[in-house]
Picture 1 (cartoon, rainbow, N blue to C red):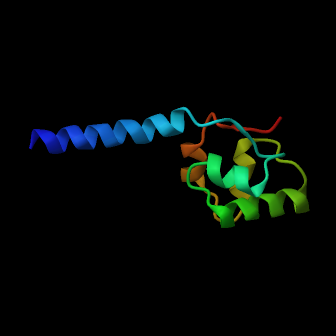
Picture 2 (tube, rainbow, N blue to C red):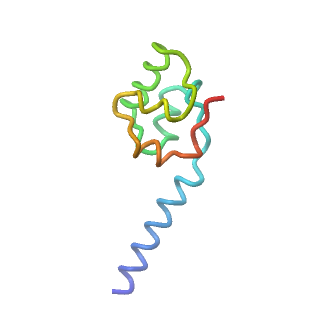
Length: 87
């Protein structure tokens, strides 16, 4: 039982550590590959949607503007808080 608890705690720590130490991503300049690898919960399709939205509507003024992109919600924004920059 103790091994299971230790395993669960280690898994939780590692997943939290990955998001804490993720690189900052400029959502106004990053390409599809960068967005999909550096942002938690953003795969290639969502990254393509971010770039398409940016090209159609101009630069994002804030990280919260990402929620205007289909498929990007509060959960993804929350997971990447502190890693998203616009300048």
